Amino acid sequence: MKVGPALTFALREAIFALAQIEQELIAPENRSGCLAVIEEVMLDEPQYWKKYYRTGFNDSLLDIRYSLSDRIRYYWPHSRIKNSVETMMVNLQGVDIPLGMISQYLPKQFERIQSGELSAMPHQLIMDKIYDVLRAYRYGCAE
Image (cartoon, rainbow, N blue to C red):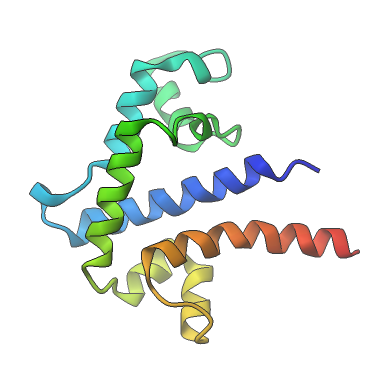
């Protein structure tokens, strides 16, 4: 049972969700530009995805963003990406994220916030999104 790619896929989903939230809550001049940075780095350094994704600019961009094969996992340590994610996290820690936005982008985490199991802090939202995968695997292994 391969758990790793599912975990990094959940990480990507959470970071992309928070990037959308940042886009709406943070002034343009202060935004991390996280999604654009990820795309730029991956397009500039295609060695980890080129042979796995479709050709053509639009198809490649869709695969970079959303492919289930999750080649983005090889880019998380890249300094530009790390810095942009860290900036996004700092930006979102400095604001109250409206519950309606969490419901829109991270619905399971919204339910846990509503039940008092989780707070609306960016790091906790990411970790809980990843734990969703572990919960599913734990359930699958228990049967």
